[in-house]
Image (cartoon, rainbow, N blue to C red; front, top):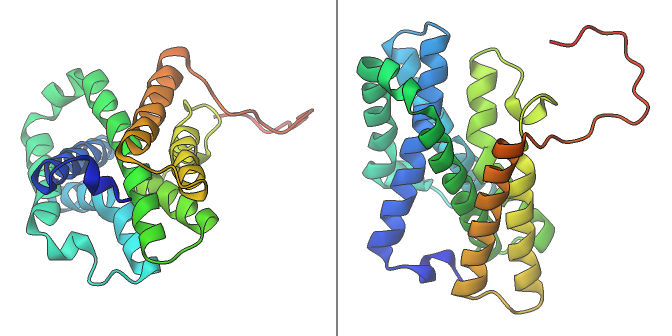
Length: 219
């Protein structure tokens, strides 16, 4: 069962584009904070929005990747970069709303990435891993290019990967027990989305090493 069966192709495409746009906004905003020029803003927007899906497609052999076969996928991050270039003070003021849409994109992409990987013949564990990579890979590339420690690895950031892991795991468990339906796929999306929102609301963070005794100054 493919996630696309949840909606008509046109609705699914619209949801993908919305997720790509919001991810691109986050990349472009970081570029502005880093004082990048217009080219740097565009590059960071593209990488953040498409990096995870591009990595997944290359691994599973879905070539050319969707990012290069669908003009809408490629152009959308450029539009987001343009919006941030001219209106970044206003975009910063609605950062809370951007984060909510980002959480929705996280849920959608972790599930769609998992189902696409499985449909190309990968095992359950590998499919879930690529689902996670689809959801968070762009953000990791964004931070690396901006010379930042990836948010994914920082203890002082609210949980981001864990909701995606939960969503991807739900999908592979449903596949394993022949229970993957439009309803269960949608439930996995919603679960990842809600977990991310709760993590932001209550500042849930992953535990650090047990009995940690480091003398290194924390940033």
